[in-house]
Length: 191
Image 1 (spheres, one colour):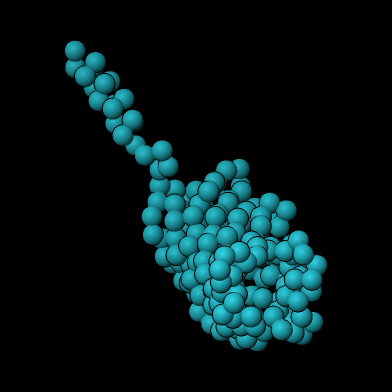
Image 2 (image 1 turned 120 degrees about the vertical axis):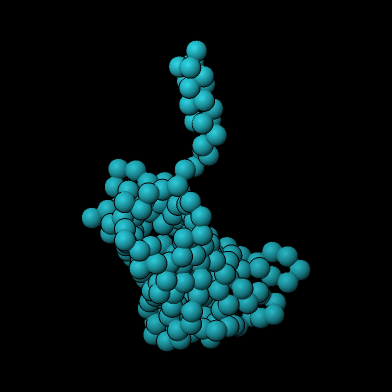
């Protein structure tokens, strides 16, 4: 009788565990190289009255290091090559690469270097760091959610908002929004 009650209690306890359990830092700890083939960096800029445009960067590189002893010492480094911007519209792509926006001829890289990682939930974190574009550096924050961790591969869904005026890219405002919405999938391979 007692064995049967204990068995039912064990089943009930298993059913009560959330579908996404906390990820042990020891399982995720390590250094990862971001794989551009399995990742994407997308953005959206709205337009007054509706519309706007979406784009993506085809070239980028980076690394993720998760510290087992102290998650706040974890690091994210990302370099984006703005000449690889693509919206599906050649005229807009050329304008974005020009000195009016990215100035990719004189500023060939956009860099993000994390300064702090704060775990906000079982699978989420707030990543704070310094974003540098067109020679200007400002603090920015992104939300990262762990999508998967298996066989030496880690995947995060990352979102955030950046004010483009801070970086001297405010051409077209207020018709086009000053806010750039980022939506990224970053997949890293341990190594």
